[in-house]
Length: 604
Image 1: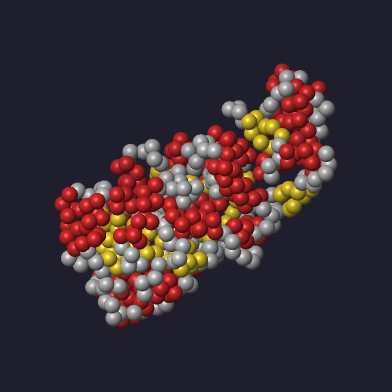
Image 2: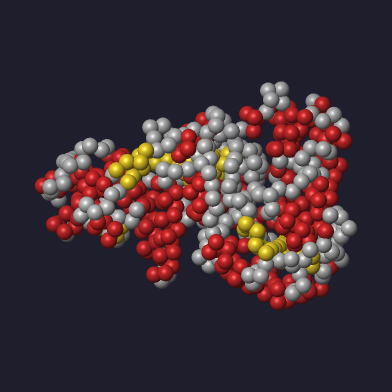
């Protein structure tokens, strides 16, 4: 579409995007940036961040320049905009010379509404000269947390983006991210020279996501149970810490009949690209990945995000789980977490490069993540509090649906700590969790006999708890900082925090898992669950039409229409184009392009 400075942002929202009203802070952000103001926007994934710069770019004269690290996704982003009738293009290292020249000519001729650039392109002087020759409506810095050097997605090229204001002082800038604490937000503002910009912080609450964390017990089998009982046929993302675990988990799921694909940095680039494209374009594919995958993934119908390993920070966890349910429909964030995770993460921090301050910061991130895992309170409240926002118990997370008990674990803690103390002080020995638990349970194993551990005064004093319960005790002692790991063999040592416990001066409260883990609202969260019975087959027919159309055009299905739009069509069954045009998410261009096809699918 041609930029229309006479059009209001609301006109553009309705005509181009097909929505009747802005959500939350969108209207205020759009008006501020469209009026020439700088902005720093924190808005959760699925909250509609893109509209906050796309609409100002369409109402202001010139081209909106979007800085994004997501080279692999730029084509899909541009395709989605073109489906709306927005003239969009991109410049990045994947293009050949002719492709770049064509986009540059379109930019200089004023034939683009939005131009996507990878941040490293701004290191190329020819790109800077190109931008200086054109008319720029605004600069949008997407995924702005990449500028944080202590963040989980740091990109060095983002540090140079502070110079945009020096070269183009009259062009408004908007920086956007889905994940940032107050400290990270301040760092973003400083590094991007946005301290005087207006800051907008939307609610971090994602009420459609059910957060669940449970102890590891054959985690791949637990994952399979989640998929089969609650998300059969749904798209999902499974995060693993290592490349080996990614490949083994993907193979396991495929062997069980689940269409799963691996994604990690060790795969050849064409394989990664092909797997990502299939995940985006096909329904019901499960992507098993390291954290190398996911930033900027716009697939709206991801129904679950599962973690088979403990994330390193609450920010990383929140951003990764936020890829579920971008369409607002019920979705699951599930995490399996065990003692080995805590030991591994502590060891990784000890072995990490960097000074003491850096390691302390990593430890703080991990402590916050452990606090989320071990809380007996509402998960959602804990998440919101981490980001500095208040919250009420949600009634939908696992701790709300099946509240865990809080019990006095002081004596159990003393037994574990005494065992570590006696091994270290009396025998000059250090061991891991397995040997400590065997001693407490009074098991005369070969290793216990070999080291004469049955003669210790603590041998057999822990028969009141099971092996699984003792692992939980040790995990929580690590989470509370009373045990630490040491050396390549990851053996346990006491900390200063353990002294008052051993002396009986400090009470240790612990979490006991409920007998049954919480399940989601129903045995399935597939969209048709919420549809009237007569609308379900119509919805499936529309999905088939959408899939065929997407394959024909070589774009992801969500570029055609989101599930939420198809659900509304299936429920309301519009009889003509005028009625179809009143469905949320159908703007003028999509109505003209796909309207007849939708009506034909309905007629079938």
